[in-house]
Amino acid sequence: MAAATARAEKLMQAILAKAFRGELVPTEAELARRDGRDYEPASVLLERIRAERAAPEPSTRPSPRGGEGGHPSDASQRDASAEYAIGQGTTMIRARGVLVR
Figure (cartoon, rainbow, N blue to C red):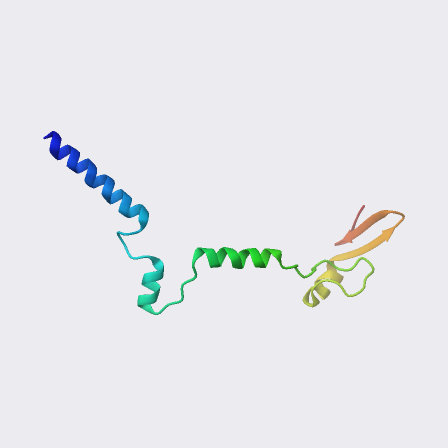
């Protein structure tokens, strides 16, 4: 009985080791190749995310001087909802008719 318990414990450890190494089921990369799909490994995905985060984002804020600023599609929304003015070291924002200092 003790021998059977020891063998069962060794078998369980062997199965767990294979599972952690990914040897029990096909990997996503293998399945994708088999199905003719594209597969992006995690390392490539992480590098793409890092590159996107490092890239400068286009400004969506309007220029405080009223010039060309922000995204072109934001112009009508910007004109309707906010007015920016800088004077005497204080920034005033008029948004939807309410003056905020």
